[in-house]
Length: 369
Image (tube, rainbow, N blue to C red; front, side):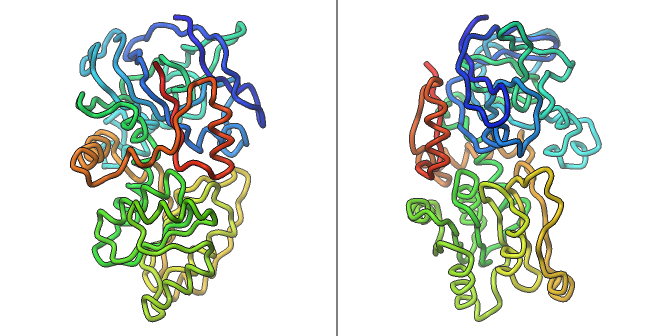
């Protein structure tokens, strides 16, 4: 099949929208006609090198659409099914899947390699094989993915909103509900109010947090954070510390969730300073792969029994969490429509990412015909 796709050919380059050839699905795979793809910050990390991946690559890992073709051996999906693509595949059989940690499935090792699970490629352009971000490649109107990356959803859910649940919504929501384990009445700080941060706020609200303090330097994002459930906002960590200290009589926050654009080593000490005894810092933001130094008080870590916890995909099981979040959306408990600041065509992808860098969007979404 011939079509257009957005390809990244190297570091610090723009996305190139050009002709590609897409192969039919192999055994265990399906072809999906996509309705939409989120412009997630993780694809920006490909261009900056913060997520190392072989080039060239078709970007995009947040997508939803309709099954168009089914490969041999696929039994649980059929043509016409509505699906969300989960950016981490789950085999259901490995040690991590069977112990309830499918976000750490062994198949996840392939998401930054490029080819499909069998080591071959589905996209081709300029006479070369083209990899797929997270083995998905949703920056194209059609893509091929392994059935282990596909979650069937109800047909009444708008696909352009469901696309966001493949990564950002579930990652943010799960960071609060699963990784931070926010409990009713707790004080929660969210550092960074982009697409993941807004959903960490939503997760904390649904979990019953007593107060949610959202930190972001951009006024528009602070204002939007209150629409998603933040009870207080601050432009920086110092402002947030004053707020939470006053609110808790100096005991500080129970949970701090780091959802900044990049996880810098210096941010860890700032996050740790915001939480009190038994406080937990959840690091969801992606750090620089070469950075191996962080700042923190080991004195406080030990004497106050503080915790630091990484979070991948919000510690979520895609086959449980995606339908659950979409049910919360159906019930009006989670906002998805309001997350989308602006929609774009595939040809406007670089405009969309510039808007993200400029802080104009909570979420940008590519909508296909």
